[in-house]
Image 1 (cartoon, helix red, strand yellow):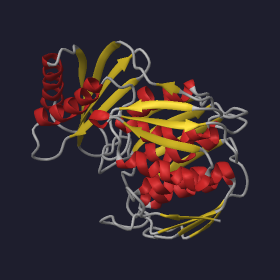
Image 2 (cartoon, rainbow, N blue to C red):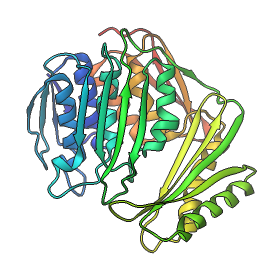
Image 3 (cartoon, rainbow, N blue to C red):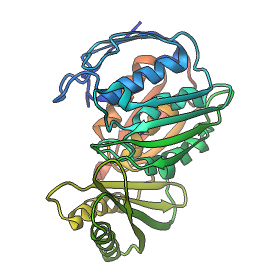
Length: 353
């Protein structure tokens, strides 16, 4: 049994999700302790518990400790991931509903189902646009296209927006499945900038707020020499919310940045925050944004052959994900840091497991 310290490094839910994915794919039972021990609300929260139960459902795993607040979990896969139709609702794991991220639930089961021999369809309900998690548009435009280049073909459709804290959003995901491992990826140059675009969206708030976010984003990016198409959008749903979602598409990769509004924070400041993040990456001249680098570690480690990416920043999430992968696989992973916080992430050779 693989024993994982859930408080290691970044110490959040990513340790749990990566460990669950690798337990399914390697068939190794695992025990994770000190889950989110340093967080304000330690242990399994609704989105983490939903990810655990989703992982268990796709491989008929035996579970111990799968309850809200638990800081210890034992997960023993009953076999390989089984393709099929699944539905998971974060609110079912909560008492009175939850905006827990559906993107993070998807990340837990995506690779096992992408490497299963058959098509899968998922309906995931909860928060689609939640702080500290990839919003669904980021998965659509940044992560999933790169995963498809490695052979993991999946499409996500945003059915209903769900902002934090109310949630009640939904995505539908179709995963093709395949026989054999993923292909390696080489992403060391991004190529010419093709376009910059985005959406400034609000739910149950006045129309002037997304208009101000969009206008400020266009002006800030234009001041940096980037002409962007940023559309305002007003939505109706379970609760109020606001955010701006920006993308820069280059010849070989797309980068994304997100910022959310909150009470008392001017719409213009929200837009500026997202622009600053996108411009910092743009000026780095690297292909992989820091939000994407840690998400690529797992598919790189599962691919047959050497993969190499260059990212604009080494995040704690990246370092933590590399550490968790090393607990399950014998792949050689290295992070070669360069000036200006850049780094090359390398997964060498063939998998020996």
